[in-house]
Structure formats: structure tokens, C-alpha cells
Amino acid sequence: MNVLLIGSGGREHALALSISKSPLLSKLYVAPGNPGTAAIAENIALDPADHRNIIAFCHRMRIALVVIGPEAPLVAGLVDELEAAGFPAFGPSKAAAQVEGSKGFTKDLCRDFSIPTGAYERFTSAEPAKAYIRKHGAPIVVKADGLAAGKGVIVAMNETEALDAVDMMFSGAFGAAGAEVVIEEFLDGEEASFFALCDGERALAFASAQDHKRVGDGDTGPNTGGMGAYSPAPVMTDEVSARVMREIVEPTLKGMKARGAPYKGVLFVGLMIGKDGPKLIEFNARFGDPETQVMLPRLDEDILPLLLDCAAGTLRNSPVRLKAQTALTVVYAAKGYPDAPERGSEIRGVDKAAAMAGVTIYHAGTKQDGARLLANGGRVLNVTALGSSVSEAQTRAYAAIDVIDWAGGFCRRDIGWRAVARERETS
Ligand code: AMP
Ligand code: GLY
Image 1 (cartoon, helix red, strand yellow):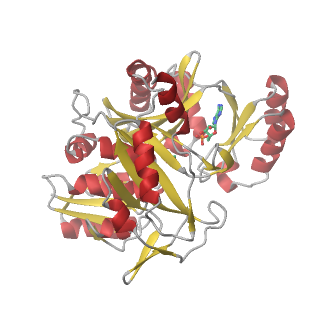
Image 2: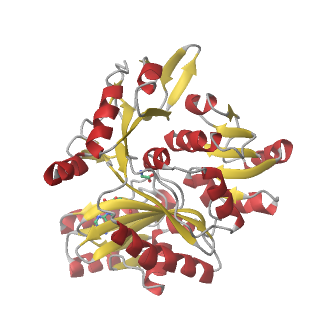
């Protein structure tokens, strides 16, 4: 069968590599793709926002499944349009993608279906929001309702910061995304991400991961899309994972069906694991980036039937098969990221690094210029390694980083520190 994958990041390179290994696949197209996907699939210069052209392409190439990587096409309703044209798609409908598109929607779902999360209230003007903050005190979390490119959340450690965040959001700093604000209880604990495959009715646990959002070593500096990750997340024991499925994922599927928006695709559950167990921080309606780059190397079965079953509503019960190994990825970013990444510097040695034992390199913001590979974005490469422990995966990933010759790049040197420290304690 022919498959079309939408997106161009490291997540999509990882998805493309897994899909390309499926015996069911005839041909894989990636729109628009990157130099990494070009080596294993055919890149197509289609704009993910141009739904009409995507559907025309599906007709022309007899596409049997469209897999959607990023959130923007989901929130824009690409799945609805594809399905109306008769093409199965992996990803939620526009209505179901609201779990990511509106924080207020998700918080109300939690309230109505008893899903554990922080106490909250929704506001459409500043004064009542400020009164709520004064009543509850800091620390407290102020969130723009809509999609704000990962920047719409202020974890305020004092009251002034929280009040300023309210003014900032209602003054239009995030445009329409900040027209409504959610104020939420501060949750203490360890963060982790959990992914479940969903077919509208049923959910199947996929894998867990932990990422590093801050740009600098020791989790310092501004937030980014993610500077590295590892899978599994040690805090996500079998018991915690089972609780997340039972207390969060399953009620969410039930709730979404009751709301007339059955959830299909992958549900990305952002969690805080605290003293009373797992609580929901947020949902995303898609795979994580860079979490996918550490989950897929662990997958020990064909990914394509799983994706097809989610789209068709025929998801099985038996667990997803994962390797017992740990995967760790280090994001190699362009200097200046996240504010103003420098473009155009040359990267050498990627093939040599990729040939090292257990190492896979996923492209994100790269560009091919004849024989030269250039930086063309913020997060540029995901240098990923498998190992029998987090420490081993970390050592392998950094050994591969050190083989890459790129004067214009930088990376964190401590990806996995928390898990590595835990391994040292227990060994
Ligand atoms: P979000 O975009 O909702 O994932 O929020 C971004 C980050 O803010 C999360 O990864 C957490 O580190 C932090 N955060 C969000 N909500 C809370 C909360 N209620 N308590 C503590 N930290 C939070
Ligand atoms: N790494 C976080 C995300 O994909 O949203």
C-alpha cells in the first residue's frame, strides 16, 4: 500500500523510518519531508495547510493511509477532509484535536469525567482572573487557552508574576490563543510523558518518555520544543502506567465519545507524577518531538498495522511489543536557538556518526545543498542511541555527537541526568 506522511521534523523522520520497514508498504511519500526522509522515502513539495492539494495527491497516488505528524493540520481539520474524501487518516478530527487546541476544553473534560488534574478556573477577562490568583496565592500556573507554540504557560512562583502574566495574555501577547485564560493549581512532582494509541473506542498503551524542555544544562534557561529525551521514563512503572490508562486515558476516550468527538490517533499525555499518583498536565493530539525519536527505536513490531487499526477503529487488545532497551536522543541545535537560530552552517560527519553501533540520526532542520548538509532551522539533528541502560545509551549518543563536525551547533551535555543518577544509586 501507499502511505503519505505529513510533516518535516525529527518526529517525521523517525515515523518514516519505522513505516519504511513495513512489509505492507509499497511506497512512502512525505510532505514536505527533510533530507533524512528523502533518503528512505519520496519527499513531495506539498504544503500541509493546502488540504485540497493533499487530497488531489491522495487520489493520484492511491494513498491507503495518511499519517499526520504535527498538530496544526489536525486542528485545521485535515483528518475530517481526508475522511470525507474517502482516505483513512491517522490522527484526530478537528473536534477531537481540541484536547490540544483548547486547554479549557480539556480541563472541563477532566471535571466532567473525574480525570485527575490540578484545580482550575477559566477566565475571559483580567479582573476575575486576578481575584482568583489573590485568593489562591502562588505558586500558581497561568495558561493561554489556545495554541501558543509552547509559550503560553507561565508557572508563576509569586503572585506578582502571576498577575503580570494575566495582563500580558489579555493584552494580546498570544493573539486569539490568549483571549481566554486558564488558571491552574501548581502541581509538584516529576514530569513524564505517556502515549496511547486510540481508535475512537479503545486505547492501547504505547510507551513513555521524559524530555528536557530547557535549553541549558541542569534544566536552566528558556523553554524549547525539547533538547533531548529518553524512553522509557523510569518513573512510569507498570503500576503508574496502568493507573494512567485506567484513570486518565480510558475516561478521556469515554468522554470524547460522549462529547460527539471520538478520539482517534495517538494521545500524548503530559503528566505530573506526585505523591497522590499521576495527574494530567496537558494532552497533545499527536506524537511528541523528540519523544517519538526515542520511542520508535524501541518498537519491536511493524508500526503500520497499528496506525491502520487506529484509523479503522480496529485496535487490538494485546500489548505493543517494545524492546527491553533504553533509547536516548540528544538534540543538536543551531547556535542562537530558541530565539534566533543561525542558518546555513555546514554539518560534516553525519554518515560516520550514524554508522556507530546502536546509533540512529534523525534529521529535523537540515537542508541539502548539493553534497553539503546545511543547518536550516532551530532543532537540526536528533542523535539517538539504544543501550542496555540509560547510561549506556547516553554514552553512545554523546560519542556520536563528538564524531559530528559542526561549528554552528550546540547541544546539552546532560540529557538523561536524572535517570542516570537513579541508575547509579541503585547499582
Ligand atoms: P504545558 O504547555 O501545559 O505542557 O506546560 C508547559 C510546562 O509548564 C509543563 O511541561 C510543566 O513543566 C509546566 N506546568 C504546566 N502546568 C503545570 C502545573 N499545573 N503545575 C506545575 N507545572 C506545570
Ligand atoms: N516535546 C514536546 C512536544 O512534542 O510537544
